[in-house]
Length: 442
Image 1 (cartoon, rainbow, N blue to C red):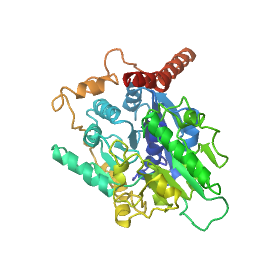
Image 2: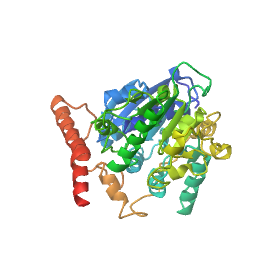
Image 3: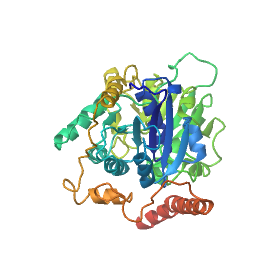
Image 4: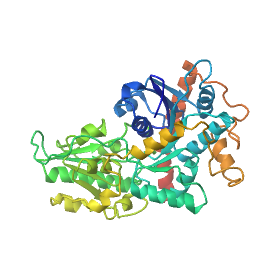
């Protein structure tokens, strides 16, 4: 991105640990200059999934500044960009759930109304898109770039936009920004053969299915004492990620008769570091499968619970990676289909060239076009106002009466109240909700 300034400025607004990782790494990929020439300001959208310091540290991405904000506080900060001698942002990445992206797009459009110059705005998805395709995409429409993580996704995204008569020019094919690491070496001997199960917070959902998977991991460890079986967890009890986890494997593991075998254990940490020692990656449908396939690590997508849209493993039909625990117990090693891999964005060489060119093209314009979301009070009068109202914005993107007027750090009392509220929410999700669900099944 051409610039006469010494540093380029980037803002990333994220609402969870995973989206912060995606957003910050995507921002660095979209900027052509070396990392030291970029100032990255991080904003965490206040909510149930706001990451904890431990989660942020595990992601491993460092920002020059990082603070927690509401949607209105973020918009106020963006509205003041370029004033009082402050250099404006070159790029803003919205790493948010679809409804929040839609609200921020309208809010930014309102804040920048009449301006000839503004930052480039990008958004996209953290990983595999296997549900709510049309809904999520139309909520993201209006950004300058809607990033697709693969050729397959880019084709699907354009088809949705064109199908409703919306401009599909914002869709740009790239790849997952966190793909990397050393290629797999099957001859390495510095550690035991390691099987890693990449857990997901909400897939599968039921206690029965999650307990079944844990039992199979334990059984595999006992059947193969020469192997190490690691259960890679996303969060510790009480923490939230992008999705809600009602039944953490940590709690289920406490009820395993006799406890976990010595060669089976729960692990946390950066996924890339875990993959450094992985010989077989096993998952239901985690994006970690794509990270693993990028490195050419043998990867198994489980079929034990069926191949179903609700599980997300239907995305891997044709991949050559579908397998069951019975097959893995017998020593089966899946072989990925090369044609399938070519469409999934697991190769990063040159993957961001088109996106960088698009950013540079927009930045070079004498007059930037206004943000123009598909959803408006005219196209979706029964839907769009409610989406924006959840973030204290009116249908035109203006803050509603009573919304916070200025960005400020929460005081000690406010922090305590928020922590108590989050604790109550987690208790409801992980304790009360499952009980109510079980009672409803009686």
